[in-house]
Length: 307
Image (cartoon, rainbow, N blue to C red; front, side, top):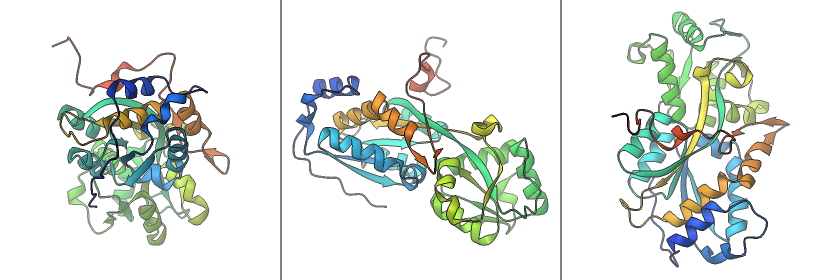
């Protein structure tokens, strides 16, 4: 998807934005209107977009700061590539390995944990592979492959696709050797769920998008993720990263840091926690903790001082 860079009206002082990013969540923030008139480009996953969560977060941010958020829904891989090209100011994604590459290559700075939910394996009640209630997702994937039941894949380098490939690998299977039963859907999460529904197949879905669509489809959760006691392999953490202004001078770094500050603030985390569909939470906030996770700031293999 081609994205044209915007012409911005005014620049923001770095010191002012740093203060904004560190002081969000209070009731009296009179100076914050100074960044009014700017536009922030956010590239993000289809799951945050399709569930409606971004509408809630962005409306609150826009109201607080008098700015516009241009949210572009892509798969995680595409969202990060848009950031690499300098056509995004901040990325919100859910594939830690791809985020690590983005940071290691110098394109991303100031990463924060944001929230999590989990992945689930969904399918029709007739369940030809008999995976319903499987305690291990690898066992379920092996069963699907054994009977060659239809499986619809994202196939798009998204966070969900990255997780799916990880599960196949953990199952000892090679996707390249699969037959016609393995369908490369190549669409967003909502499209893939609909395709699996129409084809009577299985798919891997993030819980949030599935819950937001469950009244419109005949699929049900057959293998649970860790939110409901399932395997940790199905955990689905989301992170947010600013695009590095030292690589792309045109990015709105100050505004990106204000956005990161807002969505990881008490107010932003409350919006995430309280966002539900028919009483069910779609995401769980993770930015604030009495025992902060230092590893969130750097790729896993970085050991700072051990080498």
